[in-house]
Length: 180
Image 1 (tube, rainbow, N blue to C red):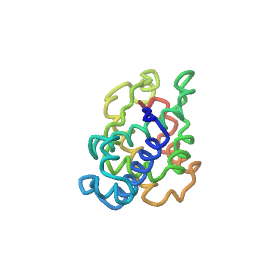
Image 2: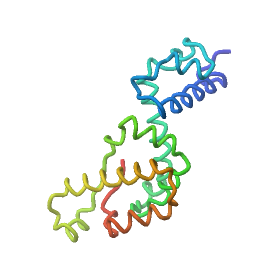
Image 3: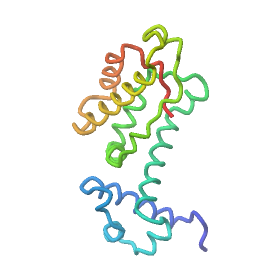
């Protein structure tokens, strides 16, 4: 029986995605080949192409999987009341999924990170509501840089310490922002 999400297909996709992430730790995206993936995964090229059009579609699917995982972390907060001062959950997720976050950053997807909600009342208190787009970019870039640095160092600091760093750097002003 050849159903859309049968067990063999799910296992093949999981193998392909795992090997792809592994390869990206030592190669650039344009150096990874379907042959490399199939050889390491022990699968035929036809299996790869039955699941993905090309390497770039595979990269997008891996990115989407990680973004979905992060969205699930904050589902309750977004549905109810978002507390953007609590990055502890995110730092714990990063520590538990270091390989995937390294891959995410290596593929350059962090440049697509968008802040979609901005509390203008708080901005008025801190910045007189001036140059908001610069403040948003400063926060996004600074946050990403800190996470990349933490990952590069092997996440030696605890998630609690990383949350404390964000809190001290932004002195409680992170409540302006909600991630997309």
